[in-house]
Image 1: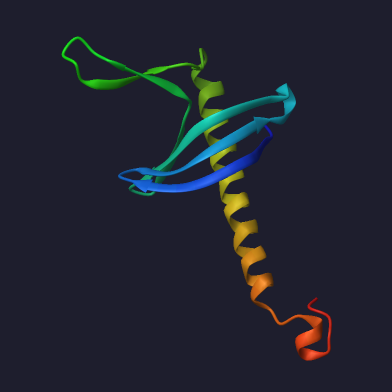
Image 2: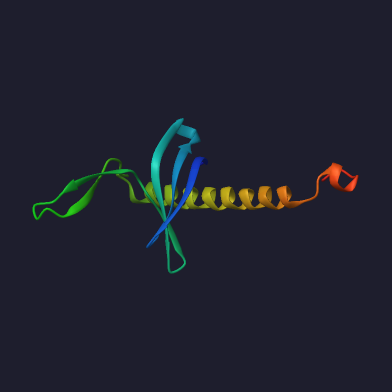
Length: 111
């Protein structure tokens, strides 16, 4: 499953590390508002949900989307986590590149 990160915003609270909009390229489907979680060396993606109050008045969430096939759910999780790792790595590379002196600063091109 090929997944592209369309938007990524860091937000750390407990296991939550970020929010992301993911595009499943084969389906031309963008899923907005996914949550990115990590704990004890394991990462997972939460699909969008909507808040509601349960019978006791406690805030909770209801799934909007879910996989009906366990194998497809795991394939999505693995592909999405890998896409996020690639995205973060590319952002780190961009930041390192931005820290390099420019051509004007040292007389030679930055690459």
